[in-house]
Length: 298
Image (tube, rainbow, N blue to C red):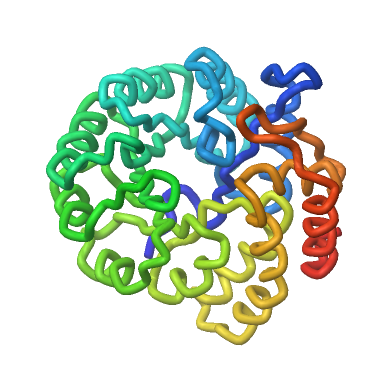
């Protein structure tokens, strides 16, 4: 499967300063550091980026800053803005704002909390896509949203809307993913939305990953994806097995609590998470540290 935005896309953590404010200078540094360490593109203000607790203005400032920071790189990496909310009108507004400040695509999550039926999801995604020229990647993550895009709905959107170009699949439903990969139109991408699902999904034909562990193991995850695509499953499996402790350690408690602790340990601090998330406890930090050591990233 093609990789329009690259095979390794990092769902970038949002840096905050000591007072909990948005640290745009650090965001610029982090974006370039991630791209120097194996990321092909970045999702900005997604769930790992604590988009739910960023104001609209903070999101716009963050998208603008990151887009500007990476604009001079060759090849130009994609900045994918997390614009989805549980309100269609608000999602449209944010997607237009992202386009205006230089984002290359929008990541549009299923509406959470209000749990629309499939016909509501179809109408929501069509409305957001129709309001912009940006490519839209749908985000299917029922564990966070209590809402799933069923295969028939997803395939209908893939075939029926030109700028719905992919899905970030965090369902762990490999049978449905295989069907979508098989029946979607040419150029439609399935991206793993769970680090530990990346190896099997790429084996099925997914184009890559939107990852969290890629903050710390971007090059190795890129090598894993390339190895699968080259037919070297033995090498890919070894990399996946070696990174498994990291996949597990970064999700011992709500993301990005462990990630922010891990980034500090790795010498790339991004501040504490915002309430209602809290900093990792001492016990959680120790678990994360052991996971990083076991995976060879610390």
